[in-house]
Image (cartoon, rainbow, N blue to C red; front, top):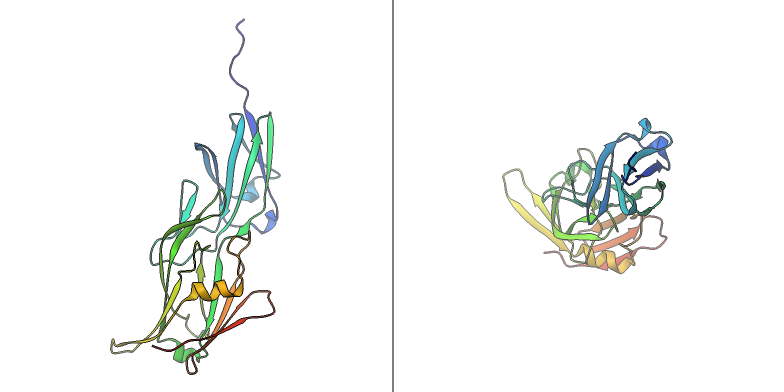
Length: 246
């Protein structure tokens, strides 16, 4: 009888913390120079583990959820021009899969920052305002959460009846992000209101783009006196700037 020389696989066991709150589809990818596997699952169908037989060796592993308009290609999540960042959560790990069994326990981290922008207008007044958000970061690397360089552009407007404009931005690679505020009249006329260096304002707060879970940002703008106050979710103090209207 010939000896079976087929290498024994390693069984990768993936579990999920806070699994009862994961109701959307989860993507997973494993890499060793090239892609080893790519899967999409509903976590509720795998308890306690999702199991995958793989060749033995170290494995770069990533999992993510919340992809809607973004693209998950390779080990990057990227945002097309014209879209804001999705409500993305991700996890990465280097798994020692050199034995017969390997384990990783997924804990998702928040990969987007929601900016809540208040220009102190009533909902009816706010409807005419547009907030063009532009930057040089268009996504992130799922294996280390590092930003991906590329053009980002999103035209934010207030939801009907809202008094505050909300938009989501990804991790930033620099301080270049700008917000241009215009007012659009019903006859097609557009009036320039202000151009604000949002990235520089965020930097002045001491905001950390490298933290595992990104915090939300609150901005209040008084267009009449040309004053802006920016603060970070959970922080006591904000930073005030004076700017000149265009």
